[in-house]
Length: 355
Ligand SMILES: *Cc1c(COP(=O)(O)O)cnc(C)c1O
Image (cartoon, rainbow, N blue to C red; front, side):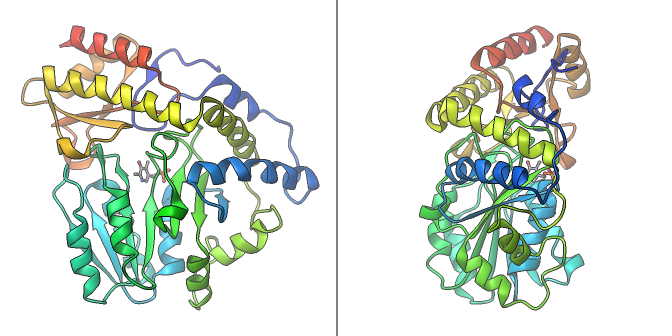
């Protein structure tokens, strides 16, 4: 079935356009063939534009978590400064220890954003060679001040900046080169509006140099292998070809709409949702740092989130529940990807009815 019977408003996976799904039914091609290299060659420019980089972009047959872990195994030599403000940034930090990577967590309360001055203070100790930042923390609906934090990190020589843009890429414009981001990664099942299973990432020259200076980078996610194969429009191992066909279709939709209009659409969907939340319940997160792609709504002691979600389900809408420790006190709406302002308006009307 190509069209879903219900509108999925969980913050990923999300609705996928029929054209993107249909692209996945392409006949099989060998991954070391010219046909495959042509496909990879076709998706690269659109991906570069999406990331805002003239540098390398790579395709990883994995979910985003694998690329998050790979960024650490390739880049951290001395110690990682892990910025933690919710479940996803916590998970990123959690990938360090099993790889024997030393880390310090700079933790802010869930719902808050990171403060660039605190990042500067930590980096001034000289203890860290890599920083991880989740741009849009999907568990709390916070969009961290990426530009300000990137500026701070770039004050320090040879400190790598790794950014998880999973739930923001294709919803909020980004300029990886201008910000000096070393690794920027995303999964495809969030604002890119594709099925889960493909990771995409950009990688700076500085990052590749750092990786080359590390004797152990892991095997599957060795960035130097991505570079070597990528230069030939190939991937280190057999990729999920179906997803790359889907990526071509998805990038066509994204750039067809234009990133500018897409960002505006996301801002409008977010504003409607935020206004609804303020009127009926409450917004969980810091009002100064609300994400255009995900809103985390606090039940404000007024509703039973489970019962509310069931009411919405009966009306044809699937909400995201609160994540981790926020499970019963919040719920989330992923207003990104293929969703429209009209979809959100209908959802909010149904939510008002369900109240
Ligand atoms: C969904 C998500 C991830 C993890 O993605 P997987 O594809 O499940 O590995 C990582 N970071 C953020 C911010 C996310 O929203």
